[in-house]
Length: 466
Image (cartoon, rainbow, N blue to C red; front, side, top):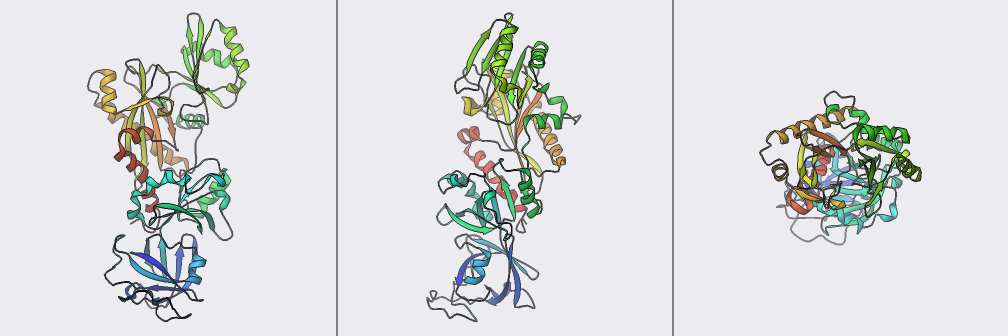
């Protein structure tokens, strides 16, 4: 592998100019691959000289005037060699010049890359250089990757040409620019509004190298893992809501229940119902500010549901667990599980989220705060709990390995684990599109490591993963 910057050589032919030591053996031609686009090119040696590049270049040079001191050996990102490409070949390959690329010789094939895609949503008008700034902190790892990091919408795919349009990261300017590129080698899915048919087509086009390929709804997830004898022990009683009779019976059985939309996260759409003094107390978190209602009897409860028929469409009802507390506050544990370049799962971050102001919700976006696991367990139980972190790790590993049996390609989960007053673990939720706000506030180093990991994993799926 050689690291290189690319210079354009005006020429009507498809030519790639490489160092003599990097030219494919016994041939003056090779297939040059960039992402999913391949162009047959003539291969010529590049001449390195001290002088500056001449502005006058003939239309068919045997050697390019493009030159760089030989001290640029191409052994690292910091010392890239210079290679040349004819403008005709560059236009066919759709190759931006600002990145530093890795170049790999594979028989009679020259691979330029890596080409890593971020799959965004369908609202293309939203995706601007300003919008993409939130992804820039992920590129602190760019010197280990090199290549083209591009972001695109599924709407921008040209299936006939195998190209996409969107934005790419310019490492020189540390910013994002518009462009059109080949379909990437591997795709990190960052949005979940595209239909399954399109995702499958993208996955197939990359040889299964689109990861986070499916987002389970909450109920789909509970239903799937309930068939696993190991994991089902960690799931609270859960049902998909169908009618008021079912809800009434569930409340009678468990006293306190929580209603959750099957397809929302971060505490949105939640409602908690508890039996209280012969009646019911409802804490409704659907509005921006929670609304607490005291209902005197079952008839009032039925009227509440009659006024809120949305609960009978894509909502689930779940036993509200008797969780351990820190003072008057509840807490749960967010575990970030990610795949490493060697394809194994590992915990890359763990924190506890503590509810605020008597809330049932621990989400940072809903007023929660963050603590370390050790501190939260000490405050909750007043003693050493060395076995709990070990049990959490086993539970999360078992979950991730089981999810690998779905036939989907996962590489990242934000898992919400709760601990009840008896120190039993419960699996509350697992999100394939997790947020990391707590880590960002409390542990910048861990936050950045989490942000880098999917790109390192993406690199491992390409020919440059070694």
